[in-house]
Image (cartoon, rainbow, N blue to C red; front, top):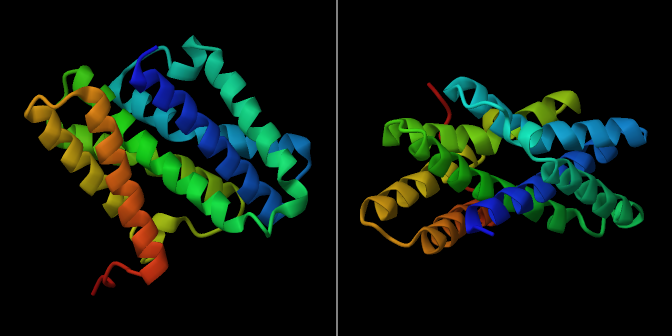
Length: 201
Protein backbone atom coordinates (compact mmCIF):
# COMPACT_ATOMS: atom_id res chain seq x y z
CA UNK A 1 0.00 0.00 0.00
CA UNK A 2 1.51 3.33 -1.08
CA UNK A 3 2.26 6.10 1.40
CA UNK A 4 0.07 8.44 -0.65
CA UNK A 5 -2.96 6.19 -0.21
CA UNK A 6 -2.32 5.80 3.51
CA UNK A 7 -2.09 9.58 3.86
CA UNK A 8 -5.38 9.98 2.00
CA UNK A 9 -7.16 7.55 4.32
CA UNK A 10 -5.63 9.11 7.45
CA UNK A 11 -6.43 12.64 6.24
CA UNK A 12 -10.02 11.62 5.59
CA UNK A 13 -10.35 10.21 9.12
CA UNK A 14 -8.90 13.26 10.87
CA UNK A 15 -11.00 15.71 8.84
CA UNK A 16 -14.13 13.65 9.53
CA UNK A 17 -13.31 13.94 13.24
CA UNK A 18 -12.73 17.69 12.86
CA UNK A 19 -16.02 18.21 11.04
CA UNK A 20 -18.04 16.08 13.43
CA UNK A 21 -16.48 17.90 16.39
CA UNK A 22 -17.42 21.30 14.97
CA UNK A 23 -20.99 20.19 14.26
CA UNK A 24 -21.40 18.75 17.74
CA UNK A 25 -19.88 21.79 19.46
CA UNK A 26 -21.61 24.55 17.56
CA UNK A 27 -25.01 23.25 16.59
CA UNK A 28 -25.76 20.28 18.88
CA UNK A 29 -26.88 18.35 15.80
CA UNK A 30 -28.36 14.86 15.78
CA UNK A 31 -26.46 11.84 14.47
CA UNK A 32 -27.32 12.62 10.85
CA UNK A 33 -26.28 16.27 11.14
CA UNK A 34 -22.93 15.46 12.74
CA UNK A 35 -22.27 12.70 10.19
CA UNK A 36 -23.18 14.98 7.30
CA UNK A 37 -20.83 17.75 8.40
CA UNK A 38 -18.07 15.22 9.06
CA UNK A 39 -18.59 13.73 5.60
CA UNK A 40 -18.55 17.09 3.81
CA UNK A 41 -15.48 18.23 5.74
CA UNK A 42 -13.60 15.06 4.84
CA UNK A 43 -14.36 15.00 1.10
CA UNK A 44 -15.12 18.67 0.35
CA UNK A 45 -11.67 20.01 -0.52
CA UNK A 46 -10.56 16.98 -2.52
CA UNK A 47 -13.85 16.81 -4.43
CA UNK A 48 -13.74 20.48 -5.41
CA UNK A 49 -10.08 20.11 -6.45
CA UNK A 50 -10.83 17.11 -8.65
CA UNK A 51 -13.78 18.86 -10.29
CA UNK A 52 -11.64 21.91 -11.06
CA UNK A 53 -8.89 19.70 -12.50
CA UNK A 54 -11.31 17.50 -14.42
CA UNK A 55 -10.27 14.35 -12.55
CA UNK A 56 -13.11 11.81 -12.54
CA UNK A 57 -14.47 9.77 -10.90
CA UNK A 58 -14.00 11.55 -7.60
CA UNK A 59 -11.74 9.61 -5.24
CA UNK A 60 -14.41 8.76 -2.66
CA UNK A 61 -16.86 7.70 -5.38
CA UNK A 62 -14.30 5.30 -6.84
CA UNK A 63 -13.11 3.79 -3.53
CA UNK A 64 -15.54 2.80 -0.78
CA UNK A 65 -12.69 2.70 1.76
CA UNK A 66 -12.99 6.48 2.04
CA UNK A 67 -16.59 6.11 3.17
CA UNK A 68 -15.46 3.59 5.78
CA UNK A 69 -12.73 6.02 6.88
CA UNK A 70 -15.32 8.76 7.39
CA UNK A 71 -17.57 6.44 9.39
CA UNK A 72 -14.58 5.43 11.50
CA UNK A 73 -13.82 9.10 12.18
CA UNK A 74 -17.43 9.75 13.23
CA UNK A 75 -17.33 6.78 15.60
CA UNK A 76 -14.10 8.07 17.18
CA UNK A 77 -15.73 11.47 17.60
CA UNK A 78 -18.75 9.85 19.27
CA UNK A 79 -16.42 8.06 21.68
CA UNK A 80 -14.99 11.45 22.72
CA UNK A 81 -18.41 13.09 22.89
CA UNK A 82 -18.77 13.20 26.68
CA UNK A 83 -15.26 14.55 27.17
CA UNK A 84 -15.30 17.11 24.37
CA UNK A 85 -13.94 19.98 26.44
CA UNK A 86 -11.12 17.86 27.80
CA UNK A 87 -10.01 16.96 24.28
CA UNK A 88 -10.48 20.37 22.69
CA UNK A 89 -6.74 20.87 22.10
CA UNK A 90 -6.41 17.38 20.63
CA UNK A 91 -9.29 18.08 18.25
CA UNK A 92 -7.53 21.23 17.04
CA UNK A 93 -4.56 18.97 16.38
CA UNK A 94 -6.77 16.77 14.16
CA UNK A 95 -7.55 19.79 12.00
CA UNK A 96 -3.85 20.66 11.81
CA UNK A 97 -3.01 17.09 10.81
CA UNK A 98 -5.76 17.21 8.22
CA UNK A 99 -4.51 20.32 6.45
CA UNK A 100 -0.93 18.98 6.48
CA UNK A 101 -1.93 15.66 4.94
CA UNK A 102 -4.30 17.11 2.37
CA UNK A 103 -1.88 19.83 1.26
CA UNK A 104 0.83 17.37 0.23
CA UNK A 105 -1.74 15.00 -1.28
CA UNK A 106 -3.38 17.74 -3.32
CA UNK A 107 -0.03 19.05 -4.51
CA UNK A 108 1.18 15.58 -5.53
CA UNK A 109 -2.04 14.68 -7.34
CA UNK A 110 -2.04 17.93 -9.31
CA UNK A 111 1.54 17.27 -10.41
CA UNK A 112 0.60 13.74 -11.46
CA UNK A 113 -2.16 15.17 -13.64
CA UNK A 114 0.46 17.23 -15.49
CA UNK A 115 -0.30 20.73 -14.21
CA UNK A 116 2.24 23.48 -13.55
CA UNK A 117 3.92 23.43 -10.09
CA UNK A 118 2.37 26.81 -9.20
CA UNK A 119 -1.08 25.37 -9.87
CA UNK A 120 -0.09 22.30 -7.85
CA UNK A 121 0.77 24.43 -4.82
CA UNK A 122 -2.49 26.36 -5.06
CA UNK A 123 -4.50 23.17 -5.44
CA UNK A 124 -2.65 21.62 -2.49
CA UNK A 125 -3.69 24.56 -0.34
CA UNK A 126 -7.21 24.46 -1.81
CA UNK A 127 -7.56 20.77 -0.99
CA UNK A 128 -6.53 21.42 2.60
CA UNK A 129 -8.66 24.45 3.46
CA UNK A 130 -11.90 24.09 1.51
CA UNK A 131 -13.25 21.24 3.62
CA UNK A 132 -12.80 23.48 6.66
CA UNK A 133 -14.44 26.41 4.90
CA UNK A 134 -17.50 24.29 4.15
CA UNK A 135 -17.48 22.92 7.72
CA UNK A 136 -17.37 26.37 9.29
CA UNK A 137 -20.04 27.70 6.94
CA UNK A 138 -22.40 24.83 7.77
CA UNK A 139 -21.88 25.38 11.52
CA UNK A 140 -22.36 29.17 11.30
CA UNK A 141 -18.72 29.97 12.08
CA UNK A 142 -16.37 32.39 10.35
CA UNK A 143 -14.00 30.22 8.26
CA UNK A 144 -10.44 30.26 9.58
CA UNK A 145 -9.03 31.55 6.30
CA UNK A 146 -11.10 34.72 6.72
CA UNK A 147 -9.46 35.41 10.06
CA UNK A 148 -5.93 36.69 10.63
CA UNK A 149 -4.62 33.29 11.69
CA UNK A 150 -1.68 31.60 9.93
CA UNK A 151 -3.56 28.80 8.18
CA UNK A 152 -3.60 28.77 4.38
CA UNK A 153 -0.13 30.34 4.33
CA UNK A 154 1.23 27.36 6.27
CA UNK A 155 -0.23 25.12 3.57
CA UNK A 156 1.39 27.13 0.78
CA UNK A 157 4.79 27.03 2.51
CA UNK A 158 4.50 23.26 2.93
CA UNK A 159 3.44 22.87 -0.69
CA UNK A 160 6.43 24.96 -1.80
CA UNK A 161 8.80 22.74 0.18
CA UNK A 162 7.17 19.65 -1.33
CA UNK A 163 7.70 21.03 -4.85
CA UNK A 164 11.33 21.93 -4.15
CA UNK A 165 12.13 18.50 -2.77
CA UNK A 166 10.20 16.87 -5.62
CA UNK A 167 12.25 18.87 -8.14
CA UNK A 168 15.45 17.54 -6.57
CA UNK A 169 14.20 13.96 -6.80
CA UNK A 170 13.79 13.41 -3.07
CA UNK A 171 12.08 10.14 -2.10
CA UNK A 172 8.29 10.60 -2.15
CA UNK A 173 7.68 9.11 1.30
CA UNK A 174 10.34 11.31 2.88
CA UNK A 175 8.97 14.33 1.03
CA UNK A 176 5.41 13.64 2.21
CA UNK A 177 6.51 13.36 5.83
CA UNK A 178 8.86 16.37 5.90
CA UNK A 179 6.52 18.72 4.04
CA UNK A 180 3.55 17.65 6.15
CA UNK A 181 5.50 18.12 9.36
CA UNK A 182 6.54 21.62 8.29
CA UNK A 183 2.89 22.59 7.84
CA UNK A 184 1.99 21.18 11.25
CA UNK A 185 4.90 22.93 12.96
CA UNK A 186 4.07 26.31 11.42
CA UNK A 187 0.39 25.96 12.27
CA UNK A 188 0.99 24.82 15.85
CA UNK A 189 3.55 27.57 16.48
CA UNK A 190 1.15 30.12 15.02
CA UNK A 191 -1.61 28.99 17.38
CA UNK A 192 0.71 28.93 20.39
CA UNK A 193 2.34 32.31 19.76
CA UNK A 194 -0.80 33.81 18.17
CA UNK A 195 0.95 34.72 14.93
CA UNK A 196 -1.35 36.39 12.45
CA UNK A 197 -1.43 37.84 8.96
CA UNK A 198 -1.38 41.67 8.75
CA UNK A 199 -4.70 43.30 7.99
CA UNK A 200 -5.43 44.32 4.41
CA UNK A 201 -5.28 48.10 4.10
